[in-house]
Length: 357
Image 1 (cartoon, one colour):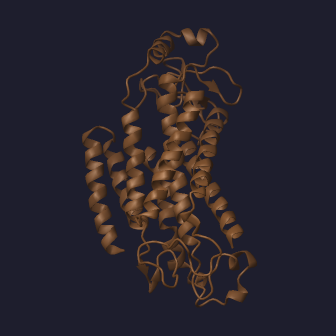
Image 2 (cartoon, helix red, strand yellow; image 1 turned 90 degrees about the vertical axis):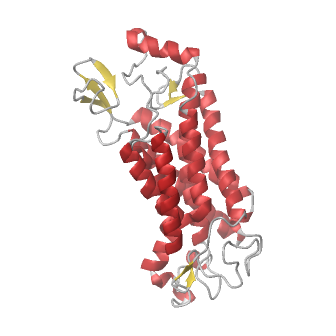
Image 3 (cartoon, helix red, strand yellow; image 1 turned 135 degrees about the horizontal axis):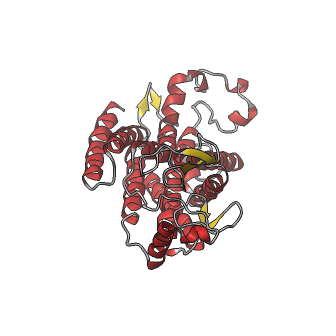
């Protein structure tokens, strides 16, 4: 595990430096990406690291696509106040930021890191979960369903995989929906009341953006599933066992297709899990839009006399809360959405595992 920590730190440093050089990250964003990438690689190995890179660089490349004519017209109309005169909510943040800061990095990747490290943390801090030292008969019936006789639960591996994959898939789907939808989706509608809003506004949805969200979530989930199949999500030794659970006669670096005593193939080995995890991520993207439209904080700039999502407007003036919950900014919406995706995916994973058992 120490070796993977060192390798992850080096690779994450190189990736963060490159992203900073290409102006994809602020300085604090680069430091955050280095820490996040190191932890993710330590817990999830090459598989998790490659999935994170796929998300980050696809999102950064999409943010550099040329603006469509409709998007440029919307930008000019927002600046002139024409949209507001037509009853369309006009936010002053018409310049879309393409450089991610530290808060944005953690909001999109923090949940994935937590699930990547979850199996090691569970086995390290909760030794009573080890079935070798804790009598199987004393476990709740639901927990016994996930246990293999004489071994710790192998459910930790699928749960960790599903959680980190769904979190990154949701972040990818949300970013793809925003970047593609605001350029080529036409005028978006706010999910709460179906009113037209400017392109790029939180809570706005378009048909093209919705399809892009599904495509992004499916891409990440499919890639992560292939990485699992190729053995890129490791089962490293940890305190005499395996990071994701000790299973007799199991390969040192991946779960087998058929685990001892299982009536069917391994949980993550089935392509069905791609639809389950990608579907959970896509539903969480809808939750992101609903939460952004209904409860995300919006502020009023007294100097420019316009609405914004920033606590400090681009003119430098401090804003006053206009609507929504003050603590619920865009970063918090993203964090909660990735958390929901991970929880949905892991819950469905557990349900599938119970059915297989």
